[in-house]
Image 1 (cartoon, rainbow over the protein chains, first blue to last red):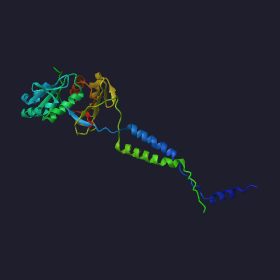
Image 2 (cartoon, chains in turn red, yellow):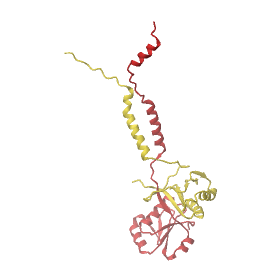
Image 3 (tube, helix red, strand yellow):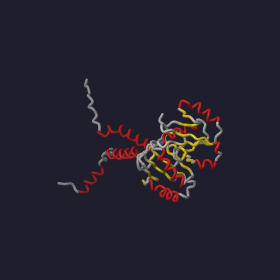
Image 4 (tube, each protein chain N blue to C red):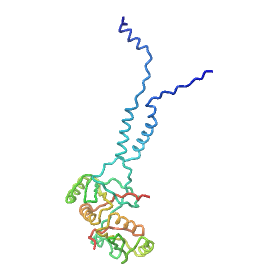
Length: 143
Length: 139
């Protein structure tokens, strides 16, 4: 004979609740998806800024005394030409002395058409490091 | 004397996952805190390296220049012939943020010839300030 329905419910309520564990699998799924998202979309690059100062012969001569402007250029092979000669990286100390002797306000750097942007940045920073008060990039076509 | 031999505890499979979950959580926290979520560029660009310590701030107009004459303005790819028009449009929409800075994200291998034509266009429309995105040289 089956017990009545009310008796069965009361019996179940008196029983100790079963210790149930939360399944970790859905949690791991979500965490992995979040991890993948952040790994693929995060960027750790710290961008640095370099001011580009484009100059043309006309604007430079209007704004400044032409005697206070030094003209440098880069050869097709990426060498620096200043004071009517080429300067290798090994001669930087001598070049720094020469730049500091010459009272100037601006060095206009004319890159060769074949020079890469990396070459231009490298030599602009090199001139600034050696004592150039200001370095501008020539916008006119290379000679 | 009765020796009691302990039965090995039947471990739940999920218990073995806990160290892995710990590691995954740590990695998640690291990527969430240390990384920056940024929109990807319209095309691949390898910027030049420099010794500059100045951090690049968000510019009103961001021009991306690829090595193969690819050009994008604020993430939208455009043709070189449309540069002047698109630049003027972008400057017009950003008139509130004066002075307008144009940030260039250019490929390090880009030639001076390519750069010269782009810079000429930019200075014709916005002569205020041009900054170039660079990366620190690897030590």
